[in-house]
Length: 113
Length: 112
Image (cartoon, rainbow over all chains, first blue to last red; front, side, top):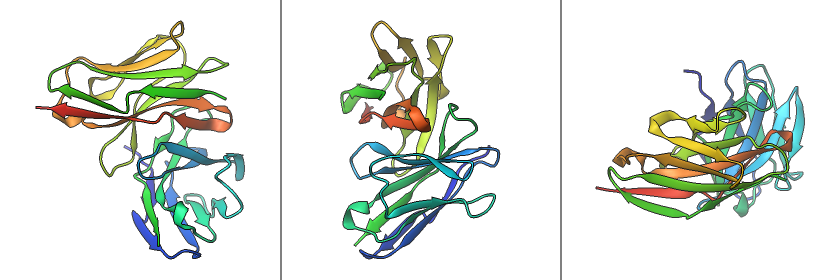
């Protein structure tokens, strides 16, 4: 069964450093998403991406965040200058159409020290 | 914007007992509703979804949910709990821009 994969599973970085989180969505899916879950809190939407453009972004997704689909398979989330409060589990998701179910990857746990 | 509220952050049941996890929604348009499960240290797995049509939706692992427009509810049930059902369950609703908005989650504990 096709699945969304994410690398790395755990990333530790120092405050102020740049990190890139990587995702490989399901191959025939056209819509891509990033969500995050701070420990003990609810899952929050960050950004949706379609046709090489951001479709929607939340207030959390400020100028320090960016997304890219550098090739036909990868979808990345870059955090330019990490802050302590960026520590969270980051989930990538993909869907076939705009209203079909979203399939989530296993997540990348980002720890900012 | 559409939203969901999950009543009860923790639910404890005995093995074999009925599982009932509550979700109420607020939506100005016909909602698309989902239940996801998160096992410890894992990602989110889709349990079931409601879009249109039949209001009783069956999902994986014996779970089902009923969409009740009059009550703005989408509660998740399972007739008989199993130890392996212990996890966190999230109700979610689609918002504009393909954004899923999640509830706060309900941690289900199953006692032997």
